[in-house]
Amino acid sequence: MHGAFIVGLKELVVNRFDVSFWEEILEYAGFDPNYYPLSNQELADNKAEVLIKASLKKLNLGDRKFGEVFGNYWIKTFAREKYFAFFDAHKSSKEFINNLTELHKKLSATLTDKNPPVFEIDWQNQNTVLITYHSSRSLIHIAVGLLKALGDFYNDDISVYRVDKNLIKVFYKD
Ligand code: HEM
Image (tube, rainbow, N blue to C red; front, side):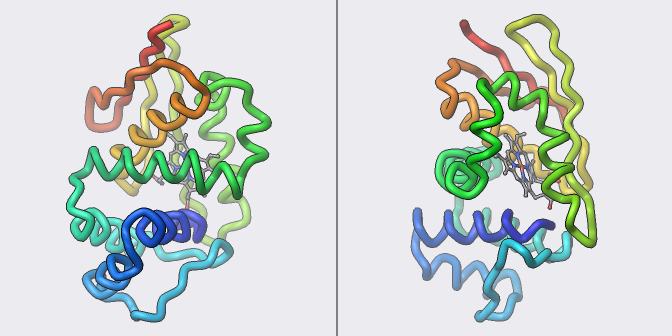
């Protein structure tokens, strides 16, 4: 997995909770206490999975809440600062959603182990979009949280639901 994802996770834990939580997460996940994630250093998917699961457990939030907390931090703070060009390039959350696969493909282009998530976008009408999430990582709860935060970021009044194992529905209220 791209190192930026792990850097974002660490920042969320340290800045919104406490550094002691991060230390406990590393210990619980069986990581070296000195492990220091870097954006340009990939983390093997199996290790990333253990770290994400340990974070969920230690923060005691549950899948859905964790997705929302992570999504909020990632969109409104982390990516907003470090990947602002993507927000500048998309004028609305609808445009952003249409480009999700392309954006993740671009970001993983330089990785040795490329495995970006793919999002199949199917607009039912101008207010409703079905998003099928394809990834070996099973992080759909994070996708839901990220989409909710994306709506907030662009001031769109949306509802985001997980309707099936790999299916998300986004409804624009106006
Ligand atoms: C500027 C905004 C965004 C940036 C810079 C960004 C960047 C990234 C990066 C670098 C990864 C790691 C990917 C990998 O290692 O293959 C990732 C993972 C992920 N992103 Fe984004 N992302 C953004 C917005 C979103 C949004 C709006 C969604 C909503 C669907 C989303 C859904 C995901 C999911 C679910 C993953 C976990 C990886 C997986 O499931 O395979 N991202 N993102």
